[in-house]
Structure formats: C-alpha cells, structure tokens
Length: 404
Image 1 (cartoon, one colour):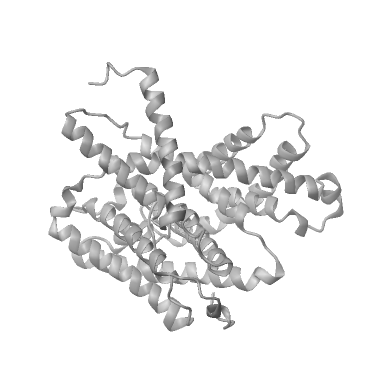
Image 2: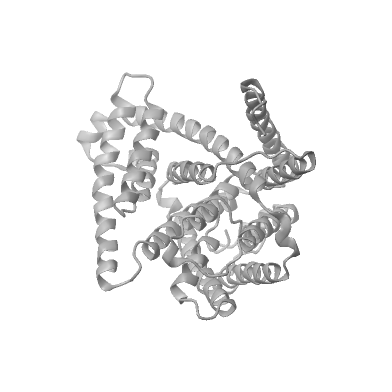
C-alpha cells in the first residue's frame, strides 16, 4: 500500500507534524486549549482521513511504547531539572508532594474498587494494577498547560504532577515485578531503592564529569544515551532506575546546596549552572519532539467505536467522576485550597498509556476494554481545558497562607 511513498514525502510529513505541533503550542497560549488535545485530535483526524481515502498506514506495534519510554525518561529528567530546592520553597514542595501522594492513593483505591465491582471474580491486585496508571497525573500535559497561571499555582501543579509520575511508576513497578507479593518481595523492593540511591551517586558523579569537565562538544546526547542504558538495565534487574534519572536532574539544578568544598572546587557552581540551563533547553526540545509524535500516533490508533459502547462510557464516566471527587476531597475538604483551576488539572496521558501497555499477562483483567483508557484520557484532557478556560487569575486568592 505504501510502496509508492518516497523518502521526500516522509520527510515532508514528519517536518509538517513538527511545524503543526509548534502552531498548536502557540494556539495553546492564545486559546488555553491543551496542545496535547490538539495533537490527539490531529491523529484521530488523520486516521479518519486515511480511512476515507482507503489508504492504510501501518503503525509498528512497538513504536508507541518506544516513543513512550524515551518520553518517560525525558519527563523524569525534566521534572528533576524543574525541582529547585530552597528554604522558602520547602512548604510548596511538601504540599505538592502530599497532594500527589494522597490523591494518588485515594484515586487508586477508588478506581480499583470500581473495577473490582464491574469485573467480579478478578483478583483485587489486578484491579489495582489497572487503577495505578489511571491515577497518575500526566506531567507531559500539565507542564505545557500552566503558562497562564500565577507563579504559585504554576509551581504547585508542576511539582504535584512530577511527584505523581514518580510515585505512580514506583508503585506500578512494585505490583508488577512478581506474580506473588510476599514479605520477601517487599524487602527486595526496599533494598532496590537503597541500591538505586547508591548507583545514583556514582552516576551523578560520572555524568557531571562528562558534562562539566569534558572538552568534547558532543556530550549531551551521549548523556541521554547513558541515562537510557541505566533505565533499561535497571528494568532488566528490576531496579527503580528512574530514581537515578530524577536525582541527577535535582543535583544539577541544586548544585549550589552541596557543601562539600572539594566537589565545589572540582565542579564550579557557575559552570554547573550554565550546563543545567543548556541541559534544560535540550531536554525541553527533545520532549517537545517526543510528545508530538507520541500523541499523534496514539490518536491515530484510537478506535472511536468505543463511543458506541455504553458499558465503556459508563465505566469511564464513573472513573472520571471518582478522580474529580477524590481531588475535591483533598483540595477542599482536607486542605481548604481554592478549586480553580487545581481541581480540573487531572489529565491522564503519556505515562498512563505507557504503563497500561506494560501490564504483564499475569496481571491482566479478563474482559477489560481499552476504550475505557481512551475515554479517561480524552475526558480528563477536556476537563483540564474547561478549568483552564474558566480560571481568571485573582491576586486576592493568595492572601491566605494555606492557598496555593
């Protein structure tokens, strides 16, 4: 079917997608419609157009997972590079961490209960494994969608989404490592965290040597390759290797806090800060490309037939309702935060999709319809858009010390 397509046509399509994605980013700043929703819409539109024209464009099965894995590493690194630890920011970091943790736990518990009710006889652990990806806030969608917010709200939502990613991934890895959860598996998980922290020290030092002391210009993508090798190797050994990537980003962004004189002399603060700024730029550009192709391809793969399935719409609607209720309980009832726009920032995206496709066979839910996943992603994205459009910054909101 595609034998007649030339290299130039492929190059044209790839570059056109990048240009369109950039225009979506500009439109996002004007209209507040999340650019990821536009990318998903573009993918869905391209699928409808190809079906109408009778052109079948095969998408390799592993392409979405490949792009998602690279995007996951970029997101975690970007999160680390965004986490600036200062004394005045400690309350914000604490609040955002507990918001991510408590809302994740409440959401995972409620969604696993919903799935266990709809799929009777299925192990509750399997329901929980499916609930975990659906309980993670997508930083890949939040980060480009907070530009219009006040500084306090922007930082809170960025930190919260970053912590949600890390917490969700670690919990997912724990429940999918082995078929049986025992005291030994819990001990191994705790030990693997300590081992990952030790490895992080060595990796951070080695990468700092590469980035700051090396005179070779071609070193940044070598660093990314090292991080990918560490992540893949950690997955093979069942180690939480994303901690290493996160800590490396945090160390680079907070090098001035390290009080060891020998290290400060060896790695000058100004050079590390210059390297960090350039690393942020490279990471941001790379994340933009990965996000563009990932969500367009994912949108292309969405089968809209699920809109005709009442069961999918019902289960998906109940799950989205549960996500909103759990977030409302934490933000308003427990901490008395303002609800606009924080309540509406519940997007599910790249990490949800990636973890969903990594669920092992022994944790599969018999009869689960993937349309539920599509529905939740589209619905939560639309909810974010509504909250973004409704919100108007009012300075008096920040007079109370408890409001963020």
